Length: 303
Image 1 (cartoon, rainbow, N blue to C red):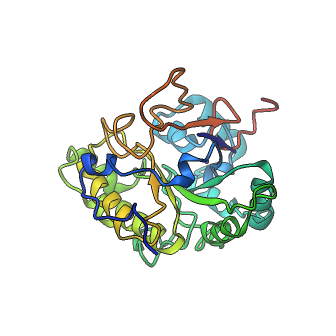
Image 2 (image 1 turned 90 degrees about the vertical axis):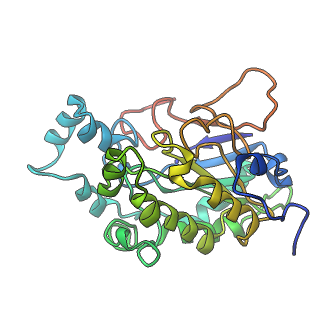
């Protein structure tokens, strides 16, 4: 399957166990096996500076890259903080119905929206299920809209003009958050504590599935810690067995250190993965429009 980025019961529903052996033996839902083209939307606070890539905050403050530091000095006031960008993330041109119609006309079979990237900003009304996100989500600051809810409704209502088939709906979610104090502390503890996972990451994933019923979870931000830290197999067993989309659910391979390219309903292996040969497992090439960024980059004038 090619994923282009711009970031009843059935035989499938059984009690899948929280092990990779069990999860990897689950047949893929027919809709994904038959899909060839999807749309991936990376959109968040990083879209405001739109400089370099969606890793803007990390390059600016994590690695103190002088190019990013200079950009902020030239464009913002003294003592400017990354969180200040959120107030300018207003989504004033966001028309989810028009987006969904365009996606359907493009021939795409599925759409994946970034619910949360590594910056931790939640594009949905997350504060009830995840109180720690009360001031860092699209309903409390910036657009003051539930971006995920609006596009979820629009995509699920859209149909291909040629086949009449409905679009399928998915969500990208980053397990990690660069500067979240709970994640920083768990990292310092060599992932022997799981406070961040228990209070932030897992409540988010369950909330997203229960509220918006994505048929696909595109996980990321996993590579620092083992899957046992993330509690990945337990979540996926629930997603594939007990969630309201269990019979059509699918997920990628980014669920912990050493998992990528080995386990998952389909593999992505690396960004823009192109194996160049026949492989045994279903794979996806998340091909970006901009070769250097998954989000909008003001420095790009052509492809």
